[in-house]
Amino acid sequence: MEKVQPAKPPTPRDVLGVPAVPPARASAAGNRWRDRVLRLHRRMAPPPLQILESLFGILEHGVLVALCEAGVPEALTRPMPVAELARRTGTDADALERLVRFGATRGWLRIDRRGAVRPTAVTAFLHRDHPGGWRAWVDFAGGDDVVGAVRRLSASGGADPFAAANGLPFFEWMTTHGERGAAFDGAMEAGARMHGLVLAKALPWTSPGSVCDVGGGTGALLATLLAHEPGLTGTVLDLPSVVEHAVEHDRLTAVAGDAFESVPAGFDTYLLVNVVHDWGDEDAVRILGTVARAATAQARVVVVEAEATARPVAGVAVATDVLMAALTPGGRERTAEEVRALGERAGLRLVSRAPLASGDVAWTFRTG
Ligand SMILES: C[S@@+](CC[C@H](N)C(=O)[O-])C[C@H]1O[C@@H](n2cnc3c(N)ncnc32)[C@H](O)[C@@H]1O
Image (cartoon, rainbow, N blue to C red):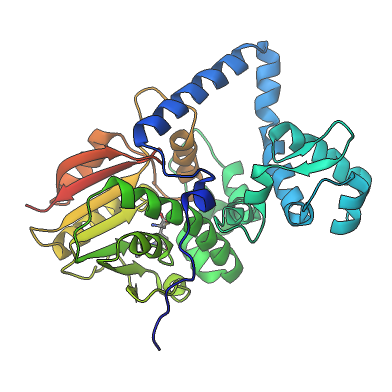
């Protein structure tokens, strides 16, 4: 059956809420300022309050998930009293109001001077039908499997918290628990659309050209990239239960496989986006080695993920590093030198490092 092009490729407004993908430098400067403001905000509170506020962080997760599960983002189509929002969502007005008041302090929605609840830009992004698809992250991160793994984080190290909590390692669990696998794939798709837009702008692409996205989920990154690069064709390689739900695009091919075993040969570019950080060093070298063997001397291998910096900065990298500690057996964010060294062990030579507007880094390797 002939595949059809998606009706409308995602735009920066859909995916990031901004009119255009910002330059990486501007986005990095913005993050540095947010880090400073956040540190100042924390230091303004006495130590006991800092401790309590940190522990109450668990409530941010719980309340956001509860508001979404109640269908608040979908029901809040215009300003309305809490009582009406409760009627629309079939919830208890008093219980809902307490969650809404907390949510208003976080900007997920707003309460105006007359006491009406109003949607914000964040409410729109939490809507189940929002084209950015970020709501899937609430469904994924709100699951008992993820919460159970995070609760088992420990300074002792060595264990696999996700497997300890759920009885199976992360990817085995996701491939055998359909609904949870779909929530995980949906969350990955949201980030993948963002990376598609960001990489279209950040890297040079040849036309005609071919890209293989290794561990590329359902192909959302490639579909976005192909929409911006008409001369490219793409192949997404992922586990069978994932590519079964691959997005449709006339220049996209989905291949079921195991990146530890083999990767299709002959592509101009191999992408590994948030894949290396899922694994400990030995496994990461095995995957990179499979890719290195498939790549010709002309091909480039692009690893995209957050970079661990010498001084921790509040933001996605420190959070995803701990998330990897909770969800995977050995996954982690790495420093630039660690990424270079992994590539070298796999027979790949680092040729460039490009910071991205997403806050991640694209490391480009060659085989020769
Ligand atoms: C963290 S996700 C990243 C997905 C995508 N690259 C992105 O950034 O949105 C890791 C991906 O690796 C896939 N994966 C896990 N083990 C794999 C294997 N042995 N072979 C191929 N893909 C695998 C998972 O199914 C998942 O889609």
